[in-house]
Image (cartoon, rainbow, N blue to C red; front, side):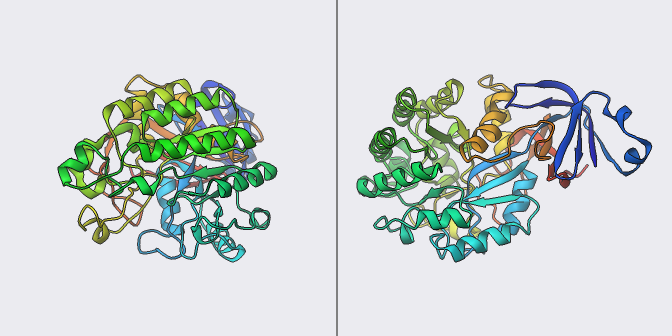
Length: 429
């Protein structure tokens, strides 16, 4: 048993917030109330671990639905065990992994490997399966079989699916299965050098870069197909103001349209790609200030209902390459909540409840997960956060350290992470 006392609880699902105690038993929450210590018998009190959460935010464990753990195939960057430790430090108790591993997660064997290894960690490790075999965009996987093994959704994240007939067939099947399907929206035929915005940043490096049209055209196509099929669709890591507006209009017509914003896209612009070089190279790229502001507006009005990290570890050697040869992506599990608190809450754009909704309740709901809320009988996945404390990230629990946010002073320190009723992370005093 675990008793969390004196904290300020926010449950984004019910809207309940205030000073409450939480008592857990086994993997579930037994009771939420005030002065719960008085309700325990002497025997219960003796075996109960007590945490004094005075001055801390008590919230549901975060649910990150866009994560790369690079396992199998690229474990020099990250593996399921180190990725899980990074998640715990960031207050993330549930992750949904992407399927661009080696081999790709298009077979029952690979899927089972990921799920089995995930069960050896302290967090909930879930995974998507691929949409197409080998991520080649030509032939659908056996979506029924992979769903039966345990895939929670489908994506070819990392590679756009160019054939609209394949996209339509995949959406129709996903709708039949009532499972989400997520899309990486970049038309490679319009891109000269990916990871850097076509504009000021590409001019700085003297390269072609990635134009906004590469995202816009794909988002427009896939939203139309989504509305026609009724599929639950996630527009991943949105980067342009035009794409935000397309999602806004589509959501007025269909309830199954979702979109993600990453912390780096609501915090940084292409100026960061000039300042930090390959550490700020990602797909889709950081764009202009007007795009960043549009993403924030999308978060404010609910057009963008998910905050996800796109945690993408790479080795220091890979990121030391030339701007056109270094891989795209940054790590994000450990910095996501501090960036959301610093940029969105302290910036006056969103309430803490709204941030938690987009980082826990909404992603859990999209994937039909029993997660992202605090209630009696609910999962004992809980985080304790000091929202007023600052920290500078100089080292990471992740195996990789490819982040432009290293050294930044950010508000929000996860003091403890509880998953399945067990304390799996505690910050050093």
